[in-house]
Image 1 (tube, rainbow, N blue to C red):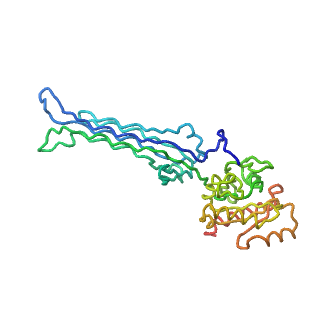
Image 2 (image 1 turned 30 degrees about the horizontal axis):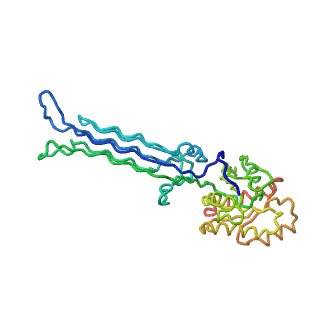
Length: 337
């Protein structure tokens, strides 16, 4: 089983301790002047404690930058003072995260926030309100109130940040199905490619240039093995990334002994993990098709589910790649085609 290296540059889940700021205390102060030693209460309000805010950043692809910032402590609000001076609010802390990041409360498992857009901001933990100064409590019958409010405490707790890759098309298949080679040919991405299982250990993203200056995003995801839904191999770490993809392209190599069986195993792993995945649009791509003649193509096509569109392609000879792009674009925009 692959064990994620501590030195990996791709981090898709991390636990951080967050504590927002305590509100500043209100001031209990009375004005004293030379000619009016009992001029009345003038205690100002305390400042608000700092919030901890998640903010989407389209230039980030990993949570790696948070690895060495696992304790995020926000600033307290300042206390109020005399002359009706309010305390300064704490300076909010912004946690920059990639698009597709979800925050969960570790104690309850409840989803707290989800970032989907660049610049989107969601308050993860609110700072405590500042207390009111005694000037706020003056009334005609109580012109010299002796009390002011303390500031309210902030919030604290452990938060799980989890990244689910955002892409239009996710490449799904067993290890060595040819997904990384396909991505390297149709996009500018340069994934690691070699002839052994789990060459792709982390999601790789690339943009496919299409006609009329349009494009769509493709993610090469770590290969599924049978039992992934139970956590075998890369297990859940892989499967959560495909929840975001609009289309799943099942890549099955032409030299597979049982094409339909391979597709059924892949489909079952998705179903076991999350049955909602079966509502996505599917496309089947038979890779390494340069080794097939027309008779073998027809035999393989007859094996495949007839309700799911398929295409034969070869990343090496680039045969069938224009047809593959056309099919993916059509399925992506089928609601408007």
